Length: 90
Image (cartoon, rainbow, N blue to C red; front, side, top):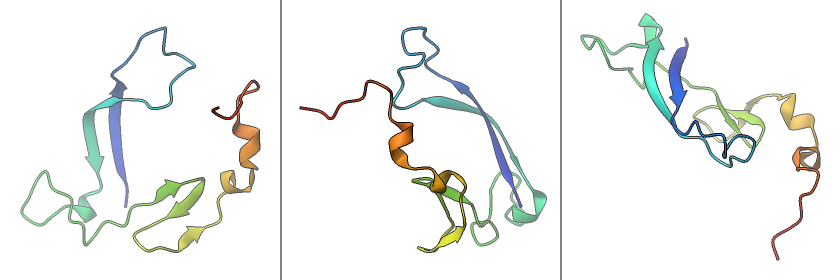
């Protein structure tokens, strides 16, 4: 069962392009599978029916503390994600 969220980038300024540490978005539309909707509510997802997949630090988790499945991104050494000129803060 899936939930898809459409959004637009709130800060669309050339100065930020390529330099963002976080991105602010505005949700414009949500699409949710009918099987996870709350009975009698048109716009509410039933948390007892939905089990989201969450990516945290390149690994897949759900609502339990254990990893759910192997992540290909989790196999890439984090050092490879650092920008070329990266240096630790002084």
